[in-house]
Length: 142
Ligand code: HNI
Image (tube, rainbow, N blue to C red; front, side, top):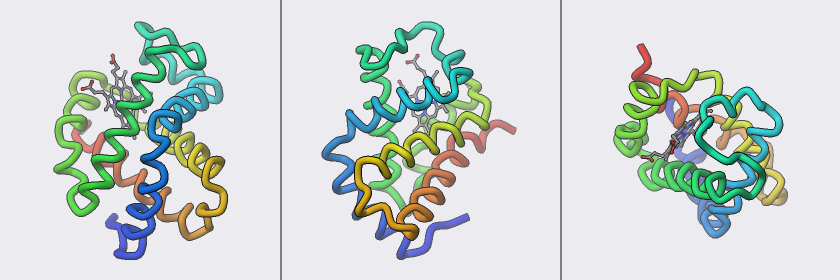
């Protein structure tokens, strides 16, 4: 699956806005993930996952930064995320279903914060982009 030129343009342009609120978006995404899908908390037994906790905020900011790396290298997402792909597959062993849940929470967070930008076209482009990112992060599993 590859992104069309128009989809890439939509992602890159919206990222300009998203990146100004990157940390808050990362935190909100994880808060939504852990409260809507509590089973995802099992990967973080070593974290304090209460809303707004320092660890949750720090992790949210790392996740969004990695998504930003994928946006910056949108023509070579596998290259941009190569190291993270190995980490998630060989070390963390996160079940791929969880990537759909996280992607959904990021999508909802972006939609809630940028309602005017979140047209049906933008929605579809983000859904596809996050699905490419998730595939890259899980492709080394088998
Ligand atoms: Ni994920 C660590 C990015 C999905 C569980 N993850 C990271 C790090 C980044 C990151 C960046 C920090 C790496 C480092 O410190 O070198 N993770 C991403 C991205 C996605 C994603 C971009 C999807 C878009 N991770 C998931 C999912 C889960 C997950 C779906 C499980 C529900 N990630 C983890 C865990 C760690 C982690 C666990 C290690 C946390 C720690 O610091 O101990």
